[in-house]
Length: 262
Image (tube, rainbow, N blue to C red; front, side):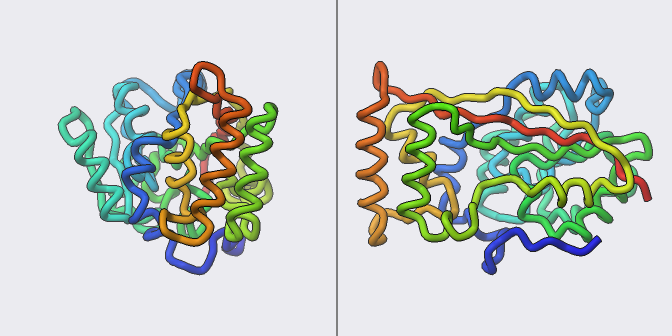
């Protein structure tokens, strides 16, 4: 299996350093059905030890802590890791690790579940597979999951069109989308894996909508030439579709769950 380079050239571990506040505040969480599915499949036993790799500001970490797990939040970006510690540092079972997907710093066969929430597409996949296989217990699982925007509503289709029109990087890279199915099959090969999809949604006002855009590495920052055009386009779309001062951001949470054979 050869590495698939799914990222632009700049270091993915530093892409969000200037967007931590927006990321922490405006990114969607994950639905309760995700945890329920992991429990049903035996991937999240009681008092599980979970490596949350690419844990960012702790959005997925909080989900596993709420489920009663001991969580090792592995994150290379100092600013994002600091935000997670500020938010979750007082919680029982939380451990912050300065590490990468390819070098987590965790012990051999030390976790029941290795999880990557909206992060796997940034990893160097060959080295990551080797590392995940090393740290997960022989009967443990790997869960890769993403929140992917659902284009079933007129507003969500307009939102997608605004990103493509006003962000050259988004249009060029299709940024923010999960790894393709071939890459996931190659990662788990030769083992089979399970797939599941869960509905997820956020109801947001305009400030939160704009914050959600600004949390993305491909979005222009205030003061950049394309910022005002994208903000104006979003405001117009919001005005067309809002009800009671909010619009619905619709997502599908895609999950891939399996084991890694040596």
